[in-house]
Amino acid sequence: MPTIHRVHNFAAGPAVLPLPVLEEIQRDLIALPGVGMSILEISHRSKAFESILAQAEADVRALGQIPPQYRVLFLQGGASMQFSMVPMNLLGPGATADYIDTGSWSEKAIKEARKVGAVQVAASTKADHYTRVPAQTELTLSPGAAYVHLTSNNTIEGTQYQRLPDVGETPLVNDTSSDMFSRPIDVARHAVIYAGAQKNMGPAGLTIVIVREDMLERSRGRQATLPTMLSYAVHAENQSLYNTPPVFSVYALGLVMKWLLNQGGLGAIAAINERKAAKLYAEIDRTAFYRGTAEKSSRSLMNVTFRLPTEELERLFVKESTAAGLDGLKGHRSVGGMRASIYNAFPEEGIDALVAFMRDFEQKRG
Image 1: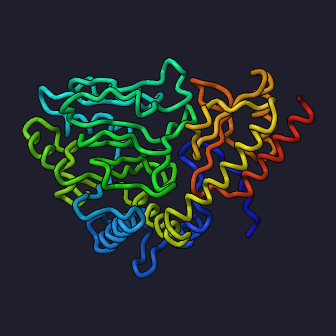
Image 2: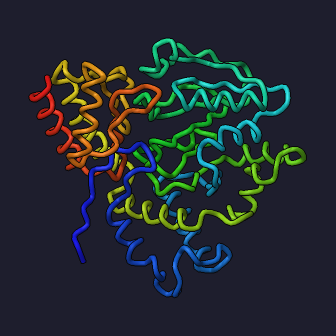
Image 3: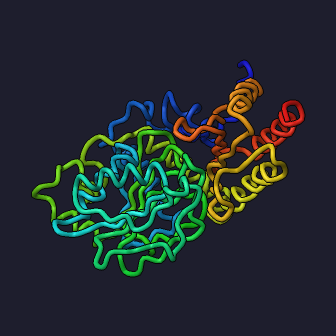
């Protein structure tokens, strides 16, 4: 068999997967052991898939230390579907939801929620070009709000909450799509946690929703007008099998959960992520040639954003880094610049390779 060449994938998502997971998928793709058919072929009603789904949920629960009063749902539609599902299930008539605006994805969530009900922006850093997340003192929360929604990590702007804001007794809803299971998470402080899988948990096509039982009661109370496929309660009552789920994505996520558990869990992976990010930020801060775009107190461990002195140099940086096997470093089209997405499965040697390239590029072009 010829040697397979893999570049370093800095893409924001779908993103790099652990190599041992890819190798296990490759081994078992034609026929799952003991099943005799591919994961791409088996029925979602089969005992084989029911076992895969149950084990994936058990490992999600173990990894996140999820309390028993929370349900884990395996849904489709990406995190963007949750921008609508959250208010449709949780924002009743006459109620107001508070949203913390920290970037492009928060803006999209606010736009969709306003189609459902009343929304109050509790804080926004748009005036600062989303270079930071709001401080606790900047929050203005509505009395009796239905919930407070935030985005824990902002892929485009490269910012991340280092600690959750205090929202009192108001239910907290958290879009953790780009940093889910990259560090320990206090599930008990949340009412709902949701995340698209394609950053840290598996391939695209699957969304995890962790929802507290009292939020399911709200969902049940809206059954008369809520489309069936958009009801948290329906998916919970049917163990995420109301319709055909993304079978392959669930299977792959289960493998990633086992890989994370074998790494030592969330505390261990957080230490690795901190070390990887520190190396890259140290290189950015070492010289004026590179400039980090996020304020240091809000820097993301997942998406490292930076600029070069000119856009011409940035275009050259992308071209030459891609040729050097460092793929996906071009920043989001809405903000430009560079973005290195270094999720859980991104190897540390890829960070070392990027730092070496940055030093060489500066010596030649600086």
